[in-house]
Picture 1 (cartoon, rainbow, N blue to C red):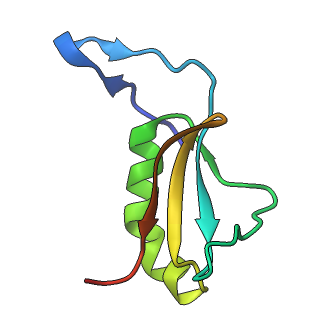
Picture 2: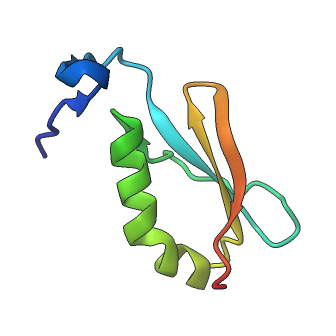
Amino acid sequence: MTHSPEPAFGGTARKHDGVPWWWQLNDADGQVIPEDPRTEFPTRSDAESWIGEAYPDLAEDGVASVTLFEGERQVYGPMSLAAG
């Protein structure tokens, strides 16, 4: 799969720095659901697009919330996958 560069302010492409973006999956009790290997993405945009498509299946599989990470840095979350 080929990924287009993520646009940045000023109209120039953002360089991918090799740090993966990934989602931590949590159950209804807030416990981490292990994912081995975890699904990683080259850009935030790719990670957010994926969660937008995958959340119905994740919720059906018992994932109650997700948290976005860039490498080991928490970016935001937990974000509920409950409809509403």
